[in-house]
Image (cartoon, rainbow, N blue to C red; front, side):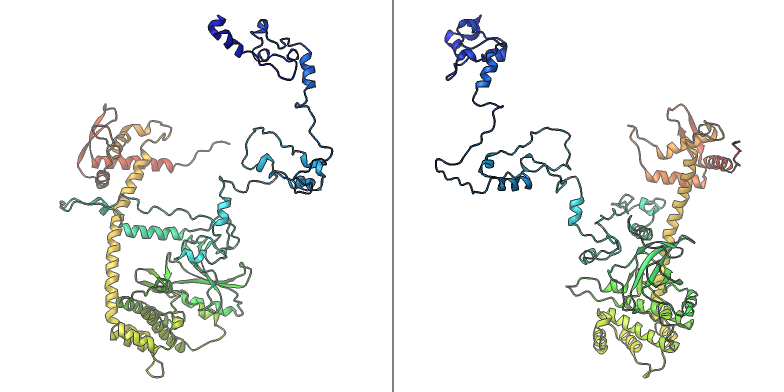
Length: 638
């Protein structure tokens, strides 16, 4: 069997333990005994020791010149044969060695140069990313410089400017280098915008429809109008991020800055001013607060000048609510409260914030006439109340809708300059000059601060627009000494033809709004029916009856719910037909005599019922819920 397994005798000799060259074989334990526990050639002439318990093995290990227990080699002197190695050479220091080890190596003598650094053996344990492991296995007390699972290192490279959803140009605010809000620590990514397109997009539709047929998108509000209203609703409910707090002013809370600039504006009022949005605790409405920074009120009668502006209600004037002083900003500030118009922008932002490298297109003349008509109407209401606007500036007229402007920041100048009274007639004449200067600035695309001599812009205006507009602007800019005193009534009378165009446009807008309101009226009826059905179907219990929703007419309403919302085709796939749902609910609301076939899910119960009967059953079941909810609660006897 040995021959079969190992072949010839020569091959067996090749598998024997090798003979030692320098030591006695009798003192060396055979490798076959160490590996297999026995030696197959012990009786065939193997020269090694086969006794495990022999003490010669221990003695032989002690006689070895080098083993794991031998002391490290340390030369006694470096003399003798001359080599290229110098004792003054810089010692080799592994990367993982600490600074203390490096300093010790530099101070030791040449004998210490040959001492190896005791590196710890690798012992895998619970691996932690926060434990720093440097080169060659040495550990450091610090943490990792970069954590791939943390955004802290990314935040350091991102701008620390607070995201402002009202800014037209976010890059300008980011490049300013200063934080928009105080106490800003790190960059916070803006929240994802709302998905405004909630309905299925309008695709190719059939053109040849019967008189009683309608497209599904005709049942809902116009897409652009709905999106614009939702954006305004979102802006009105905008709040600051967590950790950024502004003070509450009297009963106004949740302040949100609306300015897109870093520093307060000082051009119009002579003092820094800031604009905020805030909610009122009295009625829950949203208002616009304008803060005049650093104003000290010396006369209490000055604040009463706002009462005259509260009585002016005009569609082209932002309504003034109240004014008060506060020290909540750690200074003396004057606060004016006005009506809030979400997503509005000033005419300066609308006409002078475009491309800086290209010449903007000229403003259409009909738009300029529309601005002139609306502001003239506002001046008529203000001058009739024996007041002066004193705020007709391109940065104080806001655009709230398409070509719909309003005069904002009213009553502020009356309070700020209360100690320096002026004749009301003189101030009203300045209103006409400011109006002409505003229209001229927009028409020539020249900021008001760059107008200078008005003769050159007027010549440019005459070359671009009609002579009628040129004459009207020239009349507004003319000196009061050369012509009779200008009045708002005369201005409105001269603009009668263009006022008719504005009136026609407003009527068309009102007709469109009425049409959209009618569509929402239909949707409101459907929503009420869906709410009633939802409160009745699958109700667990009523007045102690767990089967209330499954008995009497409530069971028929349950089957009707399946008929409207849970239809399937022949293969059992759901059928989502919005037209079928809207049609059935409209018929239910009208209570017509049309009959429908209702069947249970197990096909064991069938009903033929009319919409008129279903309407009565729905109203009766809902009245039961109303009665049960209005019952007085019985005493629990606690």
